[in-house]
Image 1 (cartoon, rainbow, N blue to C red):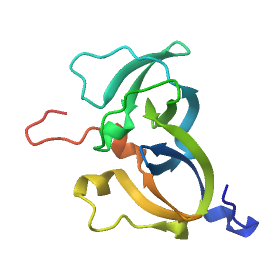
Image 2 (image 1 turned 45 degrees about the horizontal axis):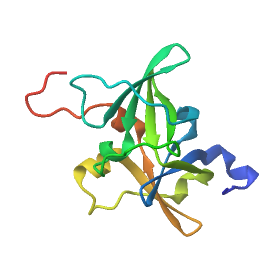
Image 3 (image 1 turned 90 degrees about the vertical axis):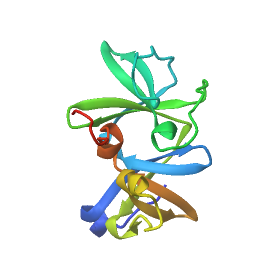
Image 4 (image 1 turned 180 degrees about the vertical axis):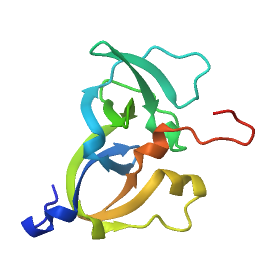
Length: 157
């Protein structure tokens, strides 16, 4: 776990790091409501490929997104080792299917590097920056862009 000095806490962020394939990503811990083991989902007809389906979470219907597929990687075939990170942005709750949670990080704003210009426009849309922490490269994901669909020309919102 990475720590900061007490006088730096005003500008510090707590992030939860997780793995997708061989890469590490992180999200703001304030958006995380729960971390639970994989639960089989009920598919939703005509949903995007990255939507695994829905689960019952304490009486509420929770959509589950295959985060790897959403970010453009291969679709995940979940096993008992996978986890669902239950997140909330505004009023929307969504479960993110990931390989495993790896760490809780406390970092200052100056440790977040901008997303490289060589990344695609879509990657820059999802990524808020990159962290170099303890010899690891961790991509910071903006959940607001992951949870909302990006309009295609001619689409109706």
